[in-house]
Image (cartoon, rainbow, N blue to C red; front, side):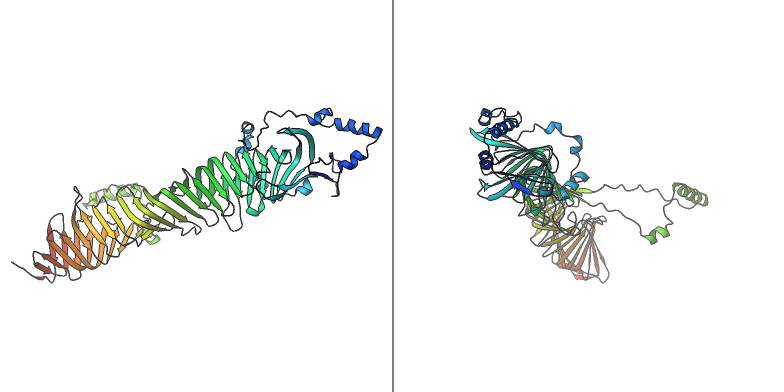
Length: 559
């Protein structure tokens, strides 16, 4: 069939219109009444000879008899879509659609069916959803035959070559489309759906179109791309996909995989709503990021706002960044760079000959690597539009744990990548199992990279018995800091220590956990059984039951 000659059929009597366009872009409609009215005498015999030579019309009676259905053509149309063509997939179709250049080229091209498809078939009537939709069917070649649907005679139209359906503003294209009764379409050979108003592109191996229900079902490695101006592109794959053209919702089923921004989402089922720019994932959803893992009973993922909300039994797992000591340029230059093993041996030999002491080889401290930390809560809201400083709101029975520490709070706010800083003003309880310390405060800030904790708002440190877990002493102050790397706790402002019959007060208290002592400075005073001692510095060794007083010592003893 060339650019000027086409096979065109007349009006089918059901409101459909067939037209042809010449190579110059002109078109004309054919009126069946005028055709039949003009047939007289020998011309009528010639007409029926041509008519019965058409595909599917061997005899006049065949026009009104049911046509045998092909084995893979299924009715009713609202039933499940079979995967009969999935095994015939080309291996090339298994490429990652997000990186496949051919897929992206198809998604970005501007389709104009009026120019590259010469024949047009039009449908104008309301759908079952009550919407008035103009549907047009295009193709380079059109073949029509009579069939029966539910006992009623209907037309089957086969479009080949750039076969296209335009449903309102949505364009559906495939190499071959079979349309029954102007309502039901079967696409094969590779389906592409373009919804430019919503930034949607979908591709699949084959699919089914239902005009009345305004539904497209897709099978065979379906892939959907969401691309909007000023937003990160979203890529979605699944086993089965259903697109609701009226509600503008895509339903994703089985092995759903979503990539957006720096995150990958895995789920069993999901849905995407165009208007809300929302991916809703009920049941077993997982979000994977760089060093992050999130899950919950339900995830609401807003692609436009770049926000994820996790609800019901939520869990956030991440790694506390490993601290690496890197010398600066001055330190590197002063040490003359790295020392070789040969140079060390020569230095030891020289020291031995000269009688100088030889330092013992200290075992190299092995890095334990990053520490896994797990956070659970009733609800997690993660906003990541600002990649450098994402914000995470964690609320409801918040529990944050790692192998030696445990934190409880009704609300935590995380700032920075991988919750670099955690803070709250709703109260917190922090337990360090390794040091047998429990910390309570109304306000907290914890910098995970530096492993540094700051407490304000009536902070309280409780010292626990290693075996029983009972409180053996308390430390209070206006401001308490704890350095987990250096294992040092610092309290400032009206500091008070209570331990058994002893009480100590001062402006500053410093607890050196490695050395095992608590040091008071700033006019400290120690009370015991009514007696007191004041000096410039007090050093207490709780494990040894020993106290050291230094400088300007004075006091009173009550007998």
